[in-house]
Length: 196
Image (cartoon, rainbow, N blue to C red; front, side, top):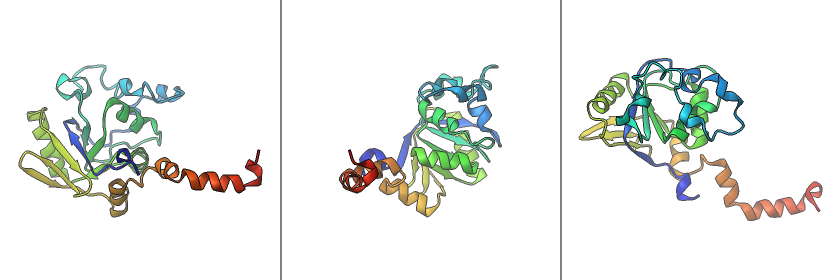
């Protein structure tokens, strides 16, 4: 596996998005489901929520953040892959939340975006700290199952199997195939329907 496939930790600034049950329609409006590629979705994250102003994604202090901290049931609603794709293309590389909707969570894992859960009190503590100091550097440590900032260490949770996939890079199914290119070519050469 390449170093790009290994996601032992994500370090950076945090953007707090408060509220339970933030669904995928809010993360990326349905009208963007018609796009052929995901390339430009990052600029449309939370577009409808941002119309009135005051949304964290509009605040200069949070531009360049790489970790999103959310409350309960983040990413609920439709199963569209567009939501994590849009957040990733905006610059998010990992998530901390009280809980994540199952399909959103699975789509994040498939993209190599770790999602650590923490208690509601600890998530609020992190959100408060980041709102008080948006320059705060946070480490979302998948290998240690911790979220660290300043002198604070918060326990993070992730399924042990998924944790191992991030640590060893096996979350990246395409990367695994590419590592075995020679074996794939050998097998393909033996298949009568692929012969030239």
